Length: 270
Image (cartoon, rainbow, N blue to C red):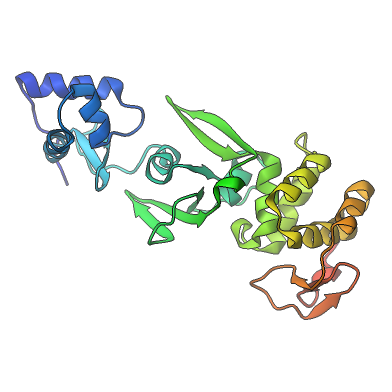
């Protein structure tokens, strides 16, 4: 356990100045700019303040302040979304994390799903008790995002329609196709419902398998969405796709050129 130790004189003044400018997290580049010192010197100061317990190190080159009332610097992250933005930007919070944010699911998953244009070595990153799962996206796929405030920091999260699109594109990002179906139903029964925007986003993303999954699920479980179903039919491509790439495709639904797991079509439609 790292105890919080005292600071005197110039060191205390410098730390106070950095903390006043901090927005959720602090990097050597941030401290260098605030203190007008070389980045190497800023890194040394941050390391020193961390060793005294005034900052807690999230990972190399990134720190967060320790609350004054805390007797220890061994703290979990207060807001891991802010740290995700700092670590993986350009990025957005998506998948099941965004679905929970918008109230489209009551399921809670510990890992935070981060869609980023970076190509990190590891797809699972742990930092101070937070777990991030990373999915790399092209720059052109960074659309349908909404900035939200987390304290003093703006963080991008996929809007409800883009969230649904990402789950149809990669069902594992929603916990599997059954969870995706539940989220899809929630979306269409919510104020976020926007079938035209969903088609527009799917056209923009360019994954034709999305139209097969969306059209099939809507025809089976949301038959009232006739216009949406028709638009999906217009966009069917050649070849067959899987309803969920991680599940067996036991039966081919020729109308949608989609392979589905055994028993899926017999799920209740309510």
